[in-house]
Image (cartoon, rainbow, N blue to C red; front, side):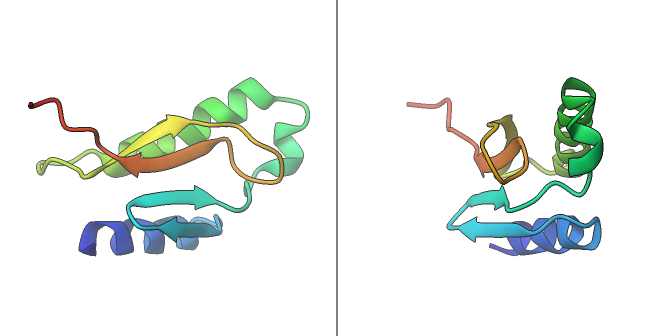
Length: 86
């Protein structure tokens, strides 16, 4: 919970409008929307790289950044990391 709250705070400070649903975070906007109209691949790739970089660190993150384009929101969604252990 603490990591999700901290991540949401940083994204809000960067101009995103994060919305949480448990351990899933959707951006209700893209701060680069106007630029994304002409340079979609560049802006969406930049958003994905920014959020992946935000989640990197010495501790294992509970979130991962995934491409998930949709109308009226950012093209990246943060979701809970899927466990690979059975």
